[in-house]
Figure (cartoon, rainbow, N blue to C red):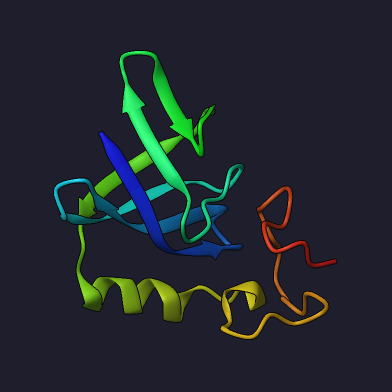
Length: 110
């Protein structure tokens, strides 16, 4: 099965990431996963008997949940995440005031 990432959000307080994906059958889903990996718009995921491949490379991704896409839920997740990297215009430095539980910033912010 092939999935393509449409958008992604990271939540620094929980260490979770959320990605809106579209399947090869045009079904929109939201996947929740540990933010030790991060999916960017345009990334392609292939699931097979051999495992998960992200952009053609075998990768480990800790999936926590998959749900049908809901615009209301997606907006709620976006509003509750205070990661400055989720902004449309990325800042030069991270100004998140809390404890960030993401080991490596997916946006490369210091």
